[in-house]
Picture 1 (spheres, helix red, strand yellow):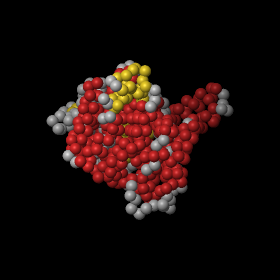
Picture 2 (cartoon, rainbow, N blue to C red; picture 1 turned 135 degrees about the horizontal axis):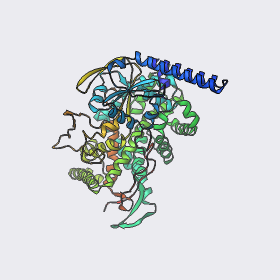
Picture 3 (tube, rainbow, N blue to C red; picture 1 turned 90 degrees about the vertical axis):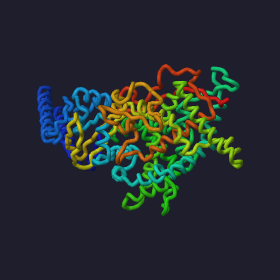
Picture 4 (spheres, helix red, strand yellow; picture 1 turned 120 degrees about the vertical axis):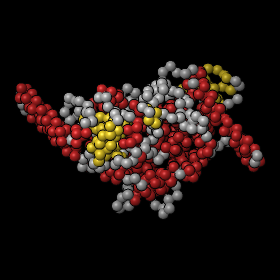
Length: 568
């Protein structure tokens, strides 16, 4: 169930134990077919006993035992706590952290020892970059899911140079400014006019008129995430035909099942999710004609897509990739971006509309920036008429939107990470020193061990956040120009909301993601009034992916109906 292919490639020692136990299970299945009931029961009992003995020997030899870090008890050999862990990862971590009375503990899952860290300060110490913990196994699964061949997926998983490309365009202020300027132009010239004209030309709302203009009906997902999707695809691929309604519907369906597909072996996906695989192939075919334009490498690159393509090709000895792999690899960063941005923009707008105070604060902040820019432009006769026609927000303007920043952070804390777990793989043997209950413990970590941090526990810690289950829009709003301080047990928590990772795996697109969300919301809110259908907040929140089981980033399964009209 967990990273079998990746463990075999990295020659993880636990994978050999997995193979031994699996062969024992195959053996018992074969021989019980030719034995009578009594003999079969006897063989089964002997086999289970062998599994338990092998497992106990493995634990006895494991250096983790000597570290005196508590371990979750289990009854089922080899599988261990796999069922409880997969059923609800956040609840599993919360339950055993409480029962074992330790913020660090281990669990035996599918033939491997997993380490769980449930406190923010300890996570910061573990994932700061000083230890050889990476998310290679996650990258391997993502690339494999999109059909990249195992050897290529492994090469891509271990590569780190693509961060330099992303940093050049997404973390550098000058590079990000250029991308957001392009993004703004695409929104103003094509995306927003198309979406809003389609909405306003449809049948008016049945709830009557408001002021001198009728309300038109749409959905948060269709309008706001639709704008993010179309602008992102066109900005990335320089082709507005790829940002079609058909592509929007298809990719949305795929992203809704991505969490489930990421935890399943490839043969299970092929067997039970063959329809999704075909859908993925069709999406790839639509993109292939565009990716093919980048077959000839340019020496200096010149844009994000070209530089990424040049980098990916340089990873392979022969310097080439076949057509299929080319488009699949180039789809990965786009889909990863949309997978996380989609639910965040949806729930950000949902929370804004759910409270009139929050809605007014956001509108006031946006209109204040529009007004200031208008006053500055009126001093320049050449730009005044253009400004009245089309309002643009610079990167500096987006950075001024502190209320929106605070709302996005609160949304990430309460919704987007509600049941997520951050996993990292040890790529070498090392001792991880963590301060547990005032005592520094050296935890021996073997190569291939998975270290888990359940973000849901960290982001809903009542000792860090007052009323953690309640959405408080100004929780992260600066006080006297300084960010608020969050503490636990007298220690300051430097990153109270840690959605984008840290250390070696810090997301290089974090600034772009937040800027996209703010720009889309500002570009619509400054021209239109928006409210829930009939001005009434829904009694029930929209259904989401994996609502009751497994991990989820709260990607919506259904839309929330809203009404929109031009501002008076």
